[in-house]
Length: 223
Image (cartoon, rainbow, N blue to C red; front, top):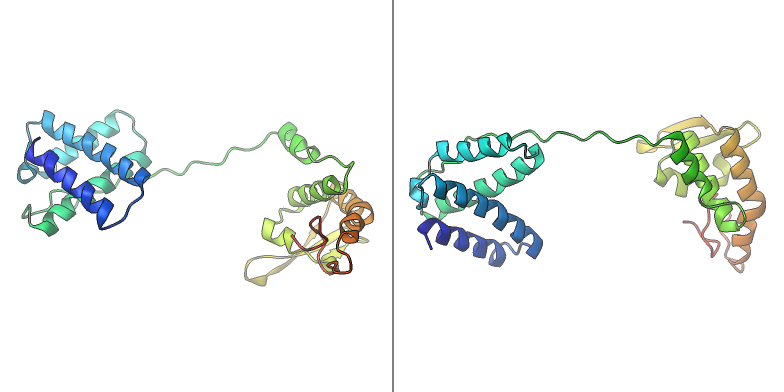
């Protein structure tokens, strides 16, 4: 085993014992650092003291050339930085060759939009033949129709509904209020839940029914 490989194993042991990293995280560190070790070996570098910034830049350049994602490049460089920082702290090297190297910017993946058919399929999935189906359909219709967050939906109170006007009062972040139109589908689904579904769940509460929130669980309590 080369001196570089021995140093790598010592570092991995340090991560496992002193930093208590998980098995999966350690495995990821090992894969990344073994790839670096192999690159340095091909460059004729077998000792940590012989590693220079140009060797590391060559490795990063080879990753970019192989079309490795920016996120993966960033992860590999984090492992590399940690390794050489530890070597510097241990006194194995006098200068850190990774210092000053820039992390590649991780691109943000844009969300994929659902098609109209997919949206309809999701909303229709619960059905309206049971109390549970009526509740979930009403929640999905309201979420889709108003843009309500999940936290706003599960905390929605009866006094926030203005069904005669087709409106719902929502409280967002910072307790900011906004009055939002329900839309015909959400309005019909909500009324069906209140008239036929909610009383079924309320009956299971045995006197402890929640009389405040719109949406209840099977025991008549808030979600």
